[in-house]
Every structure is written in C-alpha cells, then in structure tokens.
Image 1 (tube, rainbow, N blue to C red):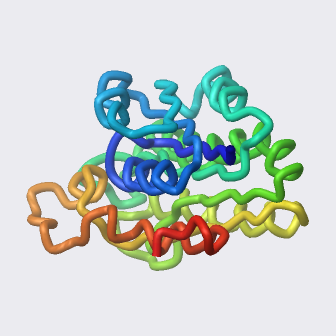
Image 2 (cartoon, rainbow, N blue to C red):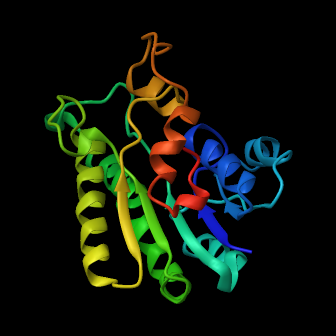
Length: 214
C-alpha cells in the first residue's frame, strides 16, 4: 500500500488532504503539535498513523519517516507558522521570531525531505511543499512569512532539479478559511474565503491522475 506523510494535519488543509488521500487508499502518516487535537481530528479516518510532535524536532522527523517505511511515495510539507499576529513590518520584526519562522517553514521541510529521499527515490515519489502567494508578492507586513515561503519555493525548485527520480513541487492553495489565515487578519471576517477542502483538487492534481481528488 502506498504511504504518504502529511505534516500539520490536525486542521485546515493538512486534515483535508489526509481525508482525501486516505479515501483514495493511501496510508497517511500525520503529525501536529497538539496531540489531543490530532487524535480527535483523525480518529474517524481509516489508514492513518498519527504521531504528535514538532517538525523542528529531529527525533520527531525521524519517527515520521520510520513510520512511513519503504512504501513512502509522497511527502506533503504543510506545517508552517505565520509569525506574530498582527504581522509587523520588517523594520520592527523580532529577529528571534523570524528565526523560528524560518526554522519551521524552511529548514524543517528540507530536513524532512532529506530523511525521506531514499524511499522517495526508490518509489519515484513526490514532495509537495505548501507555499503562498506571499512568496512572490511584496505585501506590506508579510515580510517574515512571505520571505520564508520564497525560500521554500526556491529550495523546492532546486530539489526538483537535483533529484531526477523525485518530483518536488511548490503548491499555492490560495486563500482559505483556516486558523492561520484568521491570525493573519485578526478581527476581520474571512468567511468569504473558501474552505480548505476546496483547495484539495489543486494540490492533488500534482499527483498521478488516479489519486487526484479532482
């Protein structure tokens, strides 16, 4: 049975992708920092292995890859952090916070990819790194998060160029009704944004046609 890893799967797009992949017969290894929330969110989904933890923790990353085993064919680096809310301009951005944003949004996805690559090469798998239009548009106040996603985008392109047997793809799912999006716009009504489930076909379109949710 084909296996995927999806990080940040206790809510939002990560949870929606987990449901879709499991529904197409994948075994899905998932994580989130909140153990109780992860268990509750995935309890009713079959073919899910839930491993709570933080993607910045090397031992946790190893546990995810070990749980996926030799059948790992897909890594979805979905877990990320926004940074301060409301987001400050770069002139006032706390550098220790920016360091954490980069650790979660750039370094952890690469570190997880490094561990996953032996299996992904063998299975001609894929790495889907979830990105944002803030990576390419200079939105005021989005310097921390946006620049981290810009780094992730370029890292993804280089991985794709360096790994002939693995497709590495950065996927922008667009605006969604998620907790992170609400934190980006504190006090605003974001109910006009689509639910994360609406973005699943866009993301899974980068997989083989037979597992696409479109």
